[in-house]
Length: 378
Ligand code: UDP
Ligand code: GLC
Image 1 (cartoon, rainbow, N blue to C red):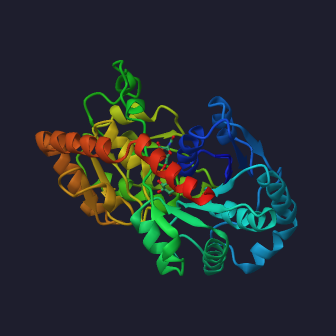
Image 2 (image 1 turned 180 degrees about the horizontal axis):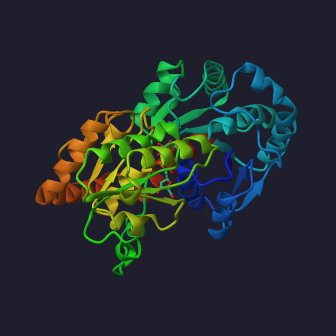
């Protein structure tokens, strides 16, 4: 099966990290077409997955854009669609991995007559998309996609609630390579980062308002001095104002000595293992939340914001803890509880680990995807 994958990003977000694993299973009989050069292209090259940067000018429409912005980007879109349609003729299937890729891939699939599968990794709701973009996305999926793969039941439900065709959608969870999260050597990261024997709470996510790093910082102010936070991740999509707000918040709360911003890192497993607890704090529904399963595979206890796909990953009090989103006081109560109850916390981390091993392996994900894509091609 020859697949043309399409992704709008040049950065390494969760959608792109997931696509690296999906595409590697079809490599070298595939091409990953991306709309921007950058770290994602480097990661594809490092894995020897064939890729091509399809345009030099990134498309200027974002998730909040209205119709006018969408229409004004037509000058960029037309040549890009033509390029995709020309490439598409050499493949059995076009597989789109992001929303802009869906819009362009949908038009191109019509032109070249090849089936389209969209991997929906976003919650199509007002918190995440403007009304105009929700309409565009749903129209493209309903009208042009043979099948839609959702990364969680929450993502699938939001798609249907927004008008998406329920008959086209199925759920395939993200999968992970367990051994990638087990490091053999004892790391010196805790000493290197000057963490000593403090209780280290890690947050692993791009810096963006809806990822809610500010909720953790506020929660930290309610925790004892011995609790410190590592914020791992950078603003990937222009959220520079939010980064400044976070630094100001840390300053104002007098938490400089208890919060470390580490920027974007590639040593996620080692960093997670250097933590006593991993927290996820999204304030809008999280479509899936790779970081939650990654922490489980690192045998670290997790607290996640209970909204979107996260409630499908964690059973509260058994395989992790769920916290109402946007509530720093509740988050701090859970952090303190975990700090005070090491035995229970250890049990939860172990249960989370076994749950992740049983339900979120790459092998299972690849089998499910392969089967669904083969059906579309047949
Ligand atoms: N990540 C990373 N380096 C960082 C911060 C995050 O590689 O500095 C990874 C993280 O391990 C996870 C992904 O980025 O695999 C984020 O995926 P998730 O589904 O949690 O959120 P998204 O950013 O896709 O909404
Ligand atoms: C998107 C979502 C994230 C999900 C990832 C991989 O980036 O925001 O929740 O885990 O895709 O499917």
